[in-house]
Image (tube, rainbow, N blue to C red; front, side, top):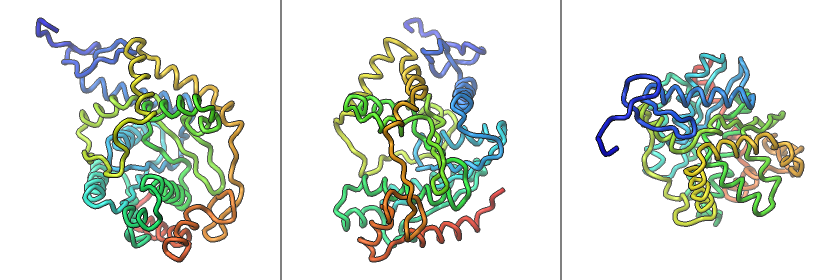
Length: 329
């Protein structure tokens, strides 16, 4: 403001740190962090993401989104009566992975949350750079495959009832719009607030489904949570269709505050329609016993080709040993 007047919180006399336009609120540090926790609580209740007595495995990368998620779920776990365990995968990407690992360890220590630490170097004898070079696949594609397997295997071995991911509103909506434009409607079925669990697959939940990226960034900053500031060296830079869609959605949000949340809720309400075309894997891998659509899961196929041996069963045994050394309730 031109007068230099400090805006005060709508709920108290403290200086406001942000304006939440869709809620017509100016909020101080305390009331903003409470506001975000309440938003996540309402999402958990609205979409029935967690139940009392559940063990929830939170996948943390060392970045701001998963740090905010773990902090919020740790707060809410006491209120709702569920257990939180964190999982971090050291991807072996040089200095980036070292800093990410340190941030994850510091975060969990501060929150007093049990941490399961998996290292690709210990598991497979190689990190993502070496595996990508050997496979001649894009690093991000290979990384996604490996992380999905390890996260699900850890959840199965830990008997978790849900895997919580740090995907927020601005992660999900661009892909929803992209898949709708390309009429890949069944793909939208994977982008709702949750997926259901099966015997060899633990369902995913996205408690930040109605929280924006700017909100998670501010929450992390205000709570002084340890995060790795650098981007993964393999992350895609420059222009992409998803980035252009995100910018378009943000421009609509500026003109019509609350549009993105309304959009996300509408997709969640109709998620059953989009899931009609989805096919479910019904087989179990003959090497490791995890769910797969064929005879051998993608992880065991990959490791057999690159390392000469399907590593799924070894990974599951490793996770059991690591978990046994961590104090769980």
